Image 1 (cartoon, rainbow, N blue to C red):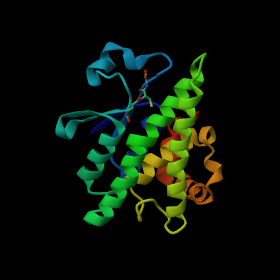
Image 2: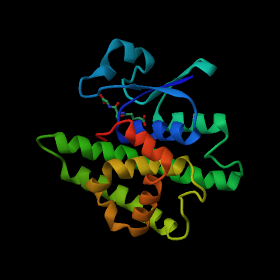
Image 3: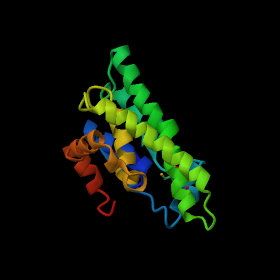
Image 4: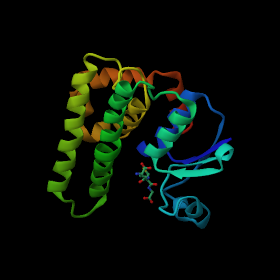
Length: 201
Ligand SMILES: N[C@@H](CCC(=O)N[C@@H](CS)C(=O)NCC(=O)O)C(=O)O
């Protein structure tokens, strides 16, 4: 059995969407970030970095943090939503790692700046340019393809979780093909079930 410790943030929704897409049995353990449950001793033992998401996979005696690592682990374990062909897989990696290493941190920077009394406009603008640059590239690709890496994959899951969480903040509505792609993903049954687990998200 897989146990998912998470909350309805962009990073937190990624493994939940994937588990639903894969149809794997799992238990959902909500972590209340507002109440600081991620800082409690029981959770810190799972992830000393005190961040969600985390999975425990009983079948492999594994505890794993970092949303990108969790998605790659589950996709490789099941051999699904990550193409076998090296060229196709490289394309998925391109979108996946651009999102996880470049775009995701920018979203967190801007969300943090918005909570500060003295936000740094240069840093916010740099983050905004990076996010919108990625969306411009994605928008061009999605004019010719229904999904980022060709077929639906973990690259779509990571990019969608971010758009859903931060789209309004960075103006995703300016990118028509990205909007159509986002609507396509939102309509997937597994995605609807995943977000339904956290109705306020
Ligand atoms: N790079 C990590 C980021 C994890 C992360 O920052 N999680 C946030 C929610 S999106 C969190 O747990 N925040 C709680 C806190 O900082 O106290 C990942 O992709 O899993």
